[in-house]
Image (tube, rainbow, N blue to C red):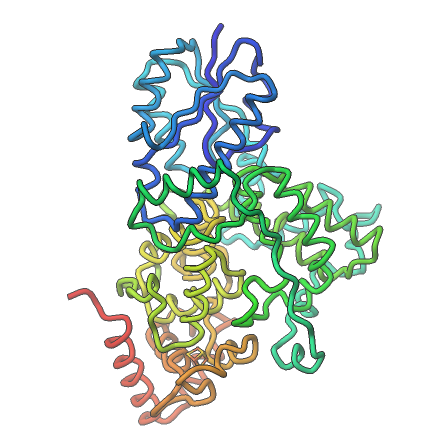
Amino acid sequence: MARTIWILGDQLTHRHSALAKADRDADVVLFIESRKRGAHIRYHQRKLVLIYSAMRHFARELREAGWTVDYHHLAETEDFAEGWKRHLTRFQPDEVWMMEPNSLPEQKAAETIVRRIERPLRTFPSCQFLVGRDEFAEFAAGKKRLLMENHYRAARKRFRILVDEAGEPEGGAWNYDAENRKTLTDWQREGAAKPPRQNSHPPDPVTRDVIRDVGSFFPKAPGRAEGFALAVTREQALEDLRGFVRERLARFGDYQDLMLAESPGMFHSWVSASINIGLLDPMECIDAAVNAYWERGAPLSAVEGFVRQILGWREFINGVYWLKMPEYGESNALSAERPLPDFFYTAETDLNCLRCTIGEVRETAYNHHIQRLMVLGNFLLLAGVRPQEALRWFLEMYIDAFDWVMAANVLGMALHADGGFMATKPYAGSGAYIDRMSNYCKGCRYDPKKKSGEGACPFNLLYWAFYDRHAKRFGANPRTAVMIKSWQKRTESDRETILREAGEFLDSHVPLAP
Ligand code: SF4
């Protein structure tokens, strides 16, 4: 029986579960670069280059390993259907095999096409996650609200990561977040040196071809492809992982929430994109950090923080996605109705924190988690921007963003659009938080300490306007009731001034659609 193994652009792993069962001598591996898929939304140029270059490199590795590969390039392929049509003129598979797609749009597209070509489709469980979709559904069964912490502790015990024989956490605590929140003042007091630069992988001829293709076929894509130096092969991704463990892991914990305008990514690993497209296995990343703790004395708080990102957040977010989608994608519990402002694409804004973070993502297609959550997400939450527009932007701009990873991160975590299904309170912060955790405020025309009046930080105005708008909902929440009380204790004229200035700011910076 002849089979086609169809590999998608975020499944570039040699552990691919369909490939593992296939017959190297008889089966054909299919890759399709679809221009329509690439233009579906306005993806950042570097993200397009990353995916297509990694696909081409992976296909080459498979050929070198003896597989028959049928590869359809952007130049000749309008969409998946066209790629398949051409594939069927050369090969006549009896069956199509896939690893289960990581996101729903790809799953639907694959099912539709395979139905159209009248071949049976067999899917194999994903090897890119540690917790299966059914297992997560079991964990979630009967719960009204899901807490990442509960999932994380169960996963630590199950995979025996940093736990002792009795299942108790190494060091006596499950969570070292309190040690992982050093501020700008701590940084200055320690006279800390700049973080080492990220690894750089200059483009080879394959990547240079892709950069040309992306320029020709996606001329309106935001960002810049020039300067692209991301890992596009497993070997390069492993170099990045080793570099992170060797040079940045030790400081990653302390300063994982700090944001410095001159140091994009700080001590973060930048391996998320490599994990999400299959170049790295999540467990090998966890093992690399945990081994550094056991063998080289890396700080437990840093190692636990890194493990939490992968075994905790990554698996949890994927579980929520498959549990709640597609309805979750339409969530808008706070009735946020403002359109995404244009400056999210241009970085032309007078709020320095937004200018720096958006400028950074335009340049690199990357921000670290606190920039995403507490600067950009926080602003979109407080300003009341439509969750689906915000979600689209995150999907477009970040190298590691895919539907499965962004839906719950943006709608649930950042925008509270799911009404608190996965976060007990909104991640809303005033200018004081950004001032404490970054050096953005130093170069800003606004004053983070000013609550109203000329030069008051817009985050301060929007913060209180947000709680005023949602006083009923958050007054009933024990974790936010204190904020509502403190707002209501202010004088009426104080409140009126703040609400008026917040309204004026929104009308000028985030206007409602005409
Ligand atoms: Fe952002 Fe306010 Fe600080 Fe300016 S003062 S950088 S707007 S937090």
